[in-house]
Length: 247
Image (cartoon, rainbow, N blue to C red; front, side, top):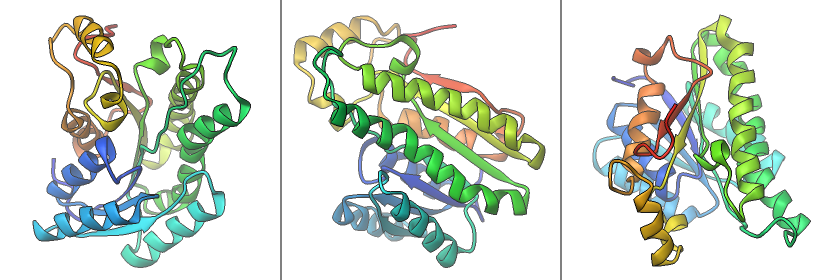
Protein backbone atom coordinates (compact mmCIF):
# COMPACT_ATOMS: atom_id res chain seq x y z
CA UNK A 1 0.00 0.00 0.00
CA UNK A 2 2.59 2.51 -1.12
CA UNK A 3 1.68 6.19 -0.95
CA UNK A 4 4.82 7.32 -2.72
CA UNK A 5 4.27 10.54 -4.65
CA UNK A 6 1.15 11.45 -2.68
CA UNK A 7 0.76 14.58 -0.55
CA UNK A 8 -1.33 14.30 2.60
CA UNK A 9 -2.75 17.01 4.84
CA UNK A 10 -3.65 15.91 8.37
CA UNK A 11 -5.43 18.12 10.89
CA UNK A 12 -5.04 17.65 14.62
CA UNK A 13 -1.67 16.10 13.86
CA UNK A 14 0.30 17.23 16.91
CA UNK A 15 -0.62 14.25 19.09
CA UNK A 16 -2.65 11.06 19.46
CA UNK A 17 -4.40 9.64 16.41
CA UNK A 18 -3.40 12.53 14.15
CA UNK A 19 0.28 12.10 14.97
CA UNK A 20 0.05 8.34 14.42
CA UNK A 21 -1.59 8.96 11.03
CA UNK A 22 1.19 11.34 10.03
CA UNK A 23 3.86 8.82 10.96
CA UNK A 24 2.09 5.98 9.17
CA UNK A 25 1.44 7.90 5.93
CA UNK A 26 5.03 9.13 5.92
CA UNK A 27 6.21 5.54 6.47
CA UNK A 28 4.20 4.52 3.41
CA UNK A 29 5.97 7.18 1.34
CA UNK A 30 3.60 10.15 1.41
CA UNK A 31 4.75 13.72 1.84
CA UNK A 32 2.95 14.84 4.98
CA UNK A 33 1.65 18.33 5.82
CA UNK A 34 0.86 18.32 9.53
CA UNK A 35 -1.56 20.92 10.89
CA UNK A 36 -2.61 21.79 14.44
CA UNK A 37 -2.48 24.64 16.93
CA UNK A 38 0.63 23.47 18.81
CA UNK A 39 3.51 24.63 16.64
CA UNK A 40 6.20 23.19 18.93
CA UNK A 41 4.76 19.66 18.79
CA UNK A 42 4.34 19.95 15.03
CA UNK A 43 7.99 20.86 14.59
CA UNK A 44 9.03 17.89 16.74
CA UNK A 45 6.91 15.63 14.55
CA UNK A 46 8.37 17.06 11.33
CA UNK A 47 11.90 16.59 12.67
CA UNK A 48 11.10 12.98 13.55
CA UNK A 49 9.69 12.25 10.09
CA UNK A 50 12.62 13.97 8.41
CA UNK A 51 15.04 12.02 10.60
CA UNK A 52 13.62 8.75 9.29
CA UNK A 53 13.95 9.80 5.67
CA UNK A 54 10.45 11.14 5.16
CA UNK A 55 9.28 14.50 3.89
CA UNK A 56 7.06 16.72 6.02
CA UNK A 57 6.25 20.32 6.92
CA UNK A 58 4.36 21.98 9.76
CA UNK A 59 1.39 24.28 9.25
CA UNK A 60 0.11 25.83 12.52
CA UNK A 61 -3.63 26.42 12.27
CA UNK A 62 -6.74 26.91 14.36
CA UNK A 63 -9.33 24.87 12.48
CA UNK A 64 -12.18 26.93 13.93
CA UNK A 65 -10.93 29.89 11.88
CA UNK A 66 -12.06 29.72 8.25
CA UNK A 67 -9.43 32.14 6.98
CA UNK A 68 -6.65 30.17 8.66
CA UNK A 69 -7.92 27.00 6.99
CA UNK A 70 -7.98 28.71 3.59
CA UNK A 71 -4.47 30.09 4.07
CA UNK A 72 -3.13 26.75 5.30
CA UNK A 73 -4.49 24.79 2.34
CA UNK A 74 -3.08 27.39 -0.06
CA UNK A 75 0.29 27.19 1.71
CA UNK A 76 0.41 23.39 1.47
CA UNK A 77 -0.39 23.47 -2.25
CA UNK A 78 2.17 26.25 -2.78
CA UNK A 79 4.87 24.19 -1.04
CA UNK A 80 4.07 20.71 -2.34
CA UNK A 81 2.08 21.40 -5.52
CA UNK A 82 -1.08 19.52 -4.58
CA UNK A 83 -3.06 17.75 -1.87
CA UNK A 84 -3.97 14.15 -2.69
CA UNK A 85 -5.06 12.97 0.74
CA UNK A 86 -7.00 14.87 3.41
CA UNK A 87 -7.37 13.42 6.90
CA UNK A 88 -9.89 15.41 8.94
CA UNK A 89 -8.85 14.41 12.42
CA UNK A 90 -8.98 17.57 14.56
CA UNK A 91 -11.31 17.09 17.50
CA UNK A 92 -12.10 18.20 21.03
CA UNK A 93 -14.59 17.37 23.78
CA UNK A 94 -16.47 19.63 26.20
CA UNK A 95 -18.37 17.00 28.14
CA UNK A 96 -21.45 17.96 30.11
CA UNK A 97 -25.03 16.78 30.55
CA UNK A 98 -27.18 18.43 27.91
CA UNK A 99 -29.30 20.27 30.48
CA UNK A 100 -26.15 21.98 31.78
CA UNK A 101 -24.24 22.33 28.54
CA UNK A 102 -23.22 25.88 27.64
CA UNK A 103 -23.87 27.10 24.13
CA UNK A 104 -20.24 28.23 23.81
CA UNK A 105 -19.02 24.69 24.56
CA UNK A 106 -21.49 23.20 22.08
CA UNK A 107 -20.33 25.60 19.37
CA UNK A 108 -16.65 24.92 20.10
CA UNK A 109 -17.10 21.17 19.64
CA UNK A 110 -19.25 21.44 16.50
CA UNK A 111 -16.93 23.98 14.92
CA UNK A 112 -13.78 21.99 15.67
CA UNK A 113 -15.01 18.49 14.94
CA UNK A 114 -17.52 18.99 12.12
CA UNK A 115 -17.40 22.43 10.54
CA UNK A 116 -13.62 22.28 10.12
CA UNK A 117 -13.95 19.05 8.14
CA UNK A 118 -16.41 20.74 5.78
CA UNK A 119 -14.14 23.77 5.40
CA UNK A 120 -10.97 21.73 4.82
CA UNK A 121 -12.71 19.50 2.29
CA UNK A 122 -14.07 22.53 0.47
CA UNK A 123 -10.56 23.97 0.16
CA UNK A 124 -8.85 20.83 -1.18
CA UNK A 125 -11.58 19.47 -3.42
CA UNK A 126 -10.74 21.63 -6.45
CA UNK A 127 -7.19 20.30 -6.52
CA UNK A 128 -8.45 16.71 -6.29
CA UNK A 129 -11.06 17.28 -9.02
CA UNK A 130 -8.44 18.65 -11.41
CA UNK A 131 -6.15 15.67 -10.98
CA UNK A 132 -9.06 13.21 -10.88
CA UNK A 133 -7.70 11.46 -7.81
CA UNK A 134 -8.26 12.06 -4.14
CA UNK A 135 -8.76 10.46 -0.77
CA UNK A 136 -10.71 12.11 2.05
CA UNK A 137 -10.74 10.30 5.38
CA UNK A 138 -12.78 11.67 8.28
CA UNK A 139 -12.03 10.50 11.80
CA UNK A 140 -15.38 10.07 13.51
CA UNK A 141 -16.12 8.00 16.65
CA UNK A 142 -18.10 5.07 17.97
CA UNK A 143 -20.02 7.65 20.01
CA UNK A 144 -21.25 9.21 16.78
CA UNK A 145 -22.86 5.83 16.16
CA UNK A 146 -24.24 4.89 19.59
CA UNK A 147 -24.25 8.16 21.56
CA UNK A 148 -22.80 8.71 25.02
CA UNK A 149 -24.07 10.27 28.22
CA UNK A 150 -22.56 13.70 28.76
CA UNK A 151 -21.34 13.94 25.18
CA UNK A 152 -24.30 15.35 23.27
CA UNK A 153 -22.09 17.84 21.44
CA UNK A 154 -19.31 15.35 20.70
CA UNK A 155 -21.68 12.59 19.58
CA UNK A 156 -23.60 15.05 17.39
CA UNK A 157 -20.43 16.31 15.75
CA UNK A 158 -19.20 12.81 15.03
CA UNK A 159 -22.59 11.64 13.75
CA UNK A 160 -22.67 14.71 11.51
CA UNK A 161 -19.23 13.75 10.22
CA UNK A 162 -20.62 10.40 9.09
CA UNK A 163 -23.40 12.13 7.17
CA UNK A 164 -20.90 14.57 5.66
CA UNK A 165 -18.73 11.63 4.59
CA UNK A 166 -21.56 9.97 2.69
CA UNK A 167 -22.74 13.19 1.04
CA UNK A 168 -19.26 14.09 -0.18
CA UNK A 169 -18.67 10.51 -1.37
CA UNK A 170 -21.71 10.79 -3.65
CA UNK A 171 -20.70 14.22 -4.96
CA UNK A 172 -17.16 13.38 -6.04
CA UNK A 173 -17.17 9.66 -6.85
CA UNK A 174 -17.31 10.23 -10.62
CA UNK A 175 -13.92 11.98 -10.44
CA UNK A 176 -12.12 9.05 -8.80
CA UNK A 177 -12.23 10.69 -5.37
CA UNK A 178 -13.28 8.61 -2.38
CA UNK A 179 -14.52 9.85 0.96
CA UNK A 180 -14.65 7.49 3.92
CA UNK A 181 -14.69 7.63 7.70
CA UNK A 182 -12.86 5.74 10.40
CA UNK A 183 -14.75 5.29 13.67
CA UNK A 184 -12.40 4.56 16.59
CA UNK A 185 -13.68 3.00 19.77
CA UNK A 186 -11.74 3.25 23.03
CA UNK A 187 -8.26 4.38 22.00
CA UNK A 188 -5.37 5.17 24.35
CA UNK A 189 -4.89 8.92 23.79
CA UNK A 190 -4.58 12.06 25.90
CA UNK A 191 -8.35 12.42 25.63
CA UNK A 192 -9.06 9.01 27.17
CA UNK A 193 -6.13 9.19 29.60
CA UNK A 194 -8.05 11.86 31.53
CA UNK A 195 -10.85 9.39 32.37
CA UNK A 196 -11.12 7.88 35.83
CA UNK A 197 -9.62 4.40 36.20
CA UNK A 198 -12.97 2.81 37.07
CA UNK A 199 -14.45 4.16 33.82
CA UNK A 200 -11.54 2.72 31.85
CA UNK A 201 -12.08 -0.69 33.43
CA UNK A 202 -15.80 -0.59 32.66
CA UNK A 203 -15.06 0.33 29.05
CA UNK A 204 -12.59 -2.54 28.78
CA UNK A 205 -15.34 -5.01 29.69
CA UNK A 206 -17.26 -3.91 26.60
CA UNK A 207 -14.42 -4.70 24.19
CA UNK A 208 -14.54 -8.30 22.90
CA UNK A 209 -10.87 -8.20 21.87
CA UNK A 210 -10.03 -7.45 25.51
CA UNK A 211 -7.71 -4.52 25.01
CA UNK A 212 -7.77 -0.78 24.52
CA UNK A 213 -6.86 0.33 21.02
CA UNK A 214 -3.67 2.18 20.11
CA UNK A 215 -3.48 5.24 17.85
CA UNK A 216 -1.58 3.05 15.38
CA UNK A 217 -4.64 0.82 15.01
CA UNK A 218 -6.56 3.80 13.68
CA UNK A 219 -3.63 5.02 11.58
CA UNK A 220 -3.43 1.64 9.82
CA UNK A 221 -7.09 1.95 8.82
CA UNK A 222 -6.57 5.52 7.59
CA UNK A 223 -3.53 4.47 5.55
CA UNK A 224 -5.54 1.70 3.90
CA UNK A 225 -8.41 4.01 2.96
CA UNK A 226 -5.89 6.50 1.55
CA UNK A 227 -4.32 3.89 -0.71
CA UNK A 228 -5.01 2.64 -4.23
CA UNK A 229 -6.03 -0.70 -2.71
CA UNK A 230 -9.14 1.01 -1.31
CA UNK A 231 -10.15 2.56 -4.64
CA UNK A 232 -13.54 0.79 -4.72
CA UNK A 233 -14.52 1.80 -1.19
CA UNK A 234 -16.36 5.08 -0.66
CA UNK A 235 -19.03 6.41 1.67
CA UNK A 236 -17.99 3.74 4.17
CA UNK A 237 -17.51 3.91 7.94
CA UNK A 238 -14.69 1.59 9.00
CA UNK A 239 -15.07 0.61 12.65
CA UNK A 240 -11.84 0.35 14.63
CA UNK A 241 -13.27 -0.52 18.02
CA UNK A 242 -12.18 -4.02 19.05
CA UNK A 243 -15.73 -5.27 18.59
CA UNK A 244 -17.51 -2.78 20.86
CA UNK A 245 -19.98 -2.13 18.06
CA UNK A 246 -20.71 -4.72 15.41
CA UNK A 247 -23.00 -4.69 12.41
